[in-house]
Image (cartoon, rainbow, N blue to C red; front, side, top):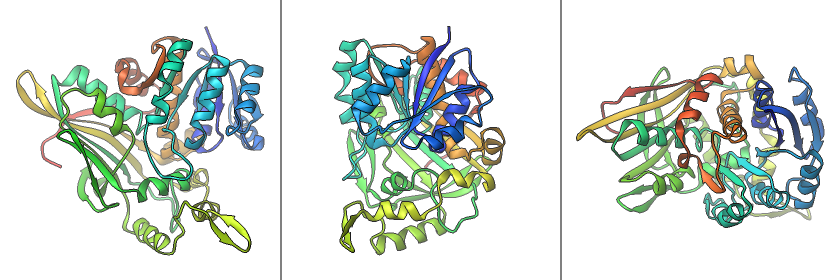
Length: 396
């Protein structure tokens, strides 16, 4: 039986989600795409071979969200708006009795702090209402969490170490640009690094810890230790874990530009006064940089994202690498998107599909690794993000 989904957000990821939902009419019978700018929704709707509804909504305002939900009456609200808006959308879902899904955890506007505590605090309210909230159904977080759950279920008796490695070996032709919302991207990269080892969190200076890793197809790339939100939940849900880290590739050119922008204060998230007006430098910078969605047409190369596991199976030590390779140009051919948006949007659709079909269900707030990985892993191969498992020999 087909269902109704309300998608909030009409950026690059929102476009992928809407188009991929449109490809599965047996599940997503009716689709409504809403954002603050309805014209963006209409432009995305024009890419979809079957009709969908569009609407304007300010996701910062619970009453507006509630009114839209009551009007459309969806079975699920799929949130690909800004992380600052997660809580207002969750509030609206509670008020209207609708299930919820997002791709990135809430963070306060005035502090670059990536924690699940604000959303985990909704656990009892969603549970009491008999509603499900699925957090982080993107790629990382999202697919990487499911890779971990799959490894725990099928490949290891105990997982001792996890290294999540995110490589973008693509080229968009710009001197400096970000692959998703510039404000969120830069806030993420410029915070202190953080990883978990032997029962405690350890911190590093931003981008101070580097490895050179030989990625499948992409080759050797400099990769830097970051803090990423999936670490926080995986520490709780992967039993026996001794260490978990997250690494991401950056080119020397990207880091050079970022350093200059930091040095002159353009990455600040606190307001400054300019000609009698309060402006936030990073928001002004966002207005100057290319829209991530505009990068897609000329993007070449691939992304390689996955997890390396070390642990024990049948009394023997073992190492496994689960990863996906995604081609920017192929993503553009299919949905007029670059691979960064594609690798986030497809898992959001899959998570929604599993919730709407009942393959994933429950009352409360869930992180991805708390659910059965098998149907999600199968769906990745069907919907455009095939994965591979290989033995890994070496150290990181």
